[in-house]
Amino acid sequence: MKRLGPLLGLGIVYLFFAIVGPEAFATTRTLETIARQTAIVGTAALGMTMVIVAGGIDLSVGSIVALASVVVALTLDGGYGGPLTAIAAAAFAGAFCGLVSGTLITRLRVAPFIVTLGMLLLVRGAAKGLGKEQKVDAPMTWLVDLLSSLPPDRRWMIVPPGVWLLALLALATAFVLRYTKLGAHLFAIGSNEETARLCGVAVERVKVVVYTLSGALAGLTGVLQFSRLTVGDPTVAVGLELDVIAAVVIGGGSLSGGEGTVLGTLVGAFIMTVIRTGTAQMGLPNWVQEIVTGVIIITAVAIDRWRHRRLDA
Image (cartoon, rainbow, N blue to C red; front, side, top):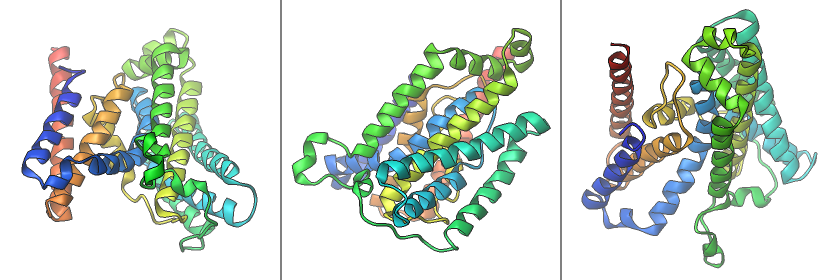
């Protein structure tokens, strides 16, 4: 039930809206839209999964996404390189932000919540400064097609390239968590940091690495955000970190650390997107969507705490 619960929940939520919602909901076009919208939250949530497994948290994800979108636009607009250079620059900018967060957490021995809360403001300010507090236009390149609706001649792709990118990154992240020494160390640190340290795990080094990886994935999310908006926007993705954390928790990840899967995270991201899409097509106001999402998050956390109390007992 722990592993299949989120997947079962996704099926129930989708069937609910397919039955009570408008006919347009249960169409391939809507499914493509759901996949496109999930790509942004899902990509950032992959990095958050690793951070939460290690017992940490990162509140700066939304700000890093905004910064990365501005970096992409500035790179293209300034003629510093093509789309691949812009992608690399965005990933590097995100990785650098994650490196700073991880270094401050380990060197200053300050709670991740406090450090990343400060980074949320710092990085957001940097994004606004780079963009001169306005949207940054950029030349049209193939980057804008990453999350655009597929034209008739490219229907063979099933979903846009950005969704396939999410799938590849998900496979890579799952491989790291399950089959590498880094993944084993993340679970060990999240389960019991002191025991992991006594067993020879370089706890500080692993934490810096995982925050750097999370930042890089947030940078790639910024590329997808740029693709969706076609501009670099320093004010975008406000509150995205809450959606990302919620996706991990709904998918079975534990805020106490030591638990979390890539599949569960993706399912959690899809659940939130299905709810928002379904309520929007039913004409319900935005505040209803927020209430429903909030109830789901609280329920998921409550179930996690109840399960841990049973195990401790």
